[in-house]
Image 1 (cartoon, one colour):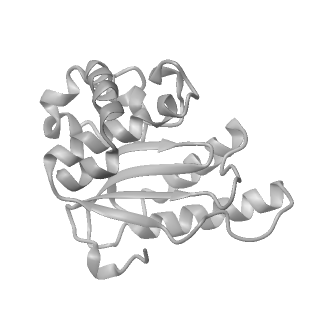
Image 2 (spheres, helix red, strand yellow):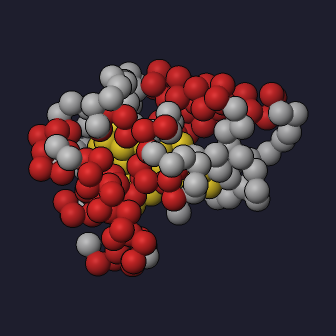
Amino acid sequence: MRCKKEEFIKNEYFHFYNHAVEDLNLYRTDEDYLYFLNKFKKKLNTYPLTVVAYCLMPNHYHFLLRQNSDIPIYRIFNDSFTSYVLHYNSKYKRKGSLFQGPLQHIRVKKHEYFVCLCKYIHYNPKKANLVKDLSEWKYSNYLEWINARKGELFSEELRDIIASDYRNYSVTLLDYEEYINERDFQKLALDL
């Protein structure tokens, strides 16, 4: 799915994601995760956006973002990952793309889907059996959502948008775990 500038509208929300090529890991070490996150944070001054939810997984990533200006926010991924791929390829002595295809995105229009998507993004490390408790995964903003860490990739204003869902977010994720095991997320997205 190619990103077209006209698809991106100020104050709208978008889910961005992509997967590593073949069986490659995008992030092999803590240093790799931190290198990318630092590059992404530095670009926040150039691309006005709000980070709602994100999760970096060993072989893929998810970001739910709000575009806060007329500058299309997909560009932050172009800049951040261009730098990261050069670093990665140099470090691991490889060539070529790290991704299966172009950056993927979905415009998020409904509140129910917005809330469900946040839970889906944060639940990824547990679903992949990387952790038993989501608070153990450092490479998402779940800890900010449950007020256990103060990070730069979280906006306090989100509490107003998702107030009822935020208060007991860790509890609602347990309910979500039960719910999502019964339904396929992609079908759920179509329902919402």
